[in-house]
Image (cartoon, rainbow, N blue to C red; front, side, top):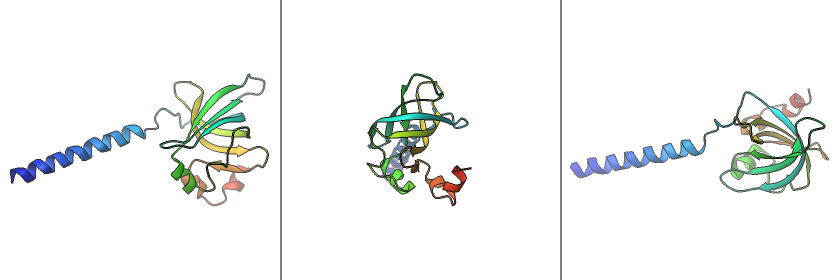
Length: 143
């Protein structure tokens, strides 16, 4: 009986520890989700890797400002593929883009990508799986 209790406690501790690590890793509190900024610029690099895809953009928020390098963080490659339309090559270095994002709370140049639009084609992608599945997303964005 004591052996089973010991095994049960060890298993519970393992599950609790794993859960805490997962929650800590996937926290998004560093982003100010109450704000949405728009940056216009060009893609410098795309890192299509787990656990989070990152896109580096040289651009500006205000017209006339000097371009700065911004880091846009997204979810995993698998989640982006499920979000609709994403592949490793849909956004490439050199692409001219407009990006809507939630900024980092600490004021550094970066944020959580919400939507990226390719200027040359007008094609857009979102990192939000639920929004991508919403009906009439294109019409809503053109208003």
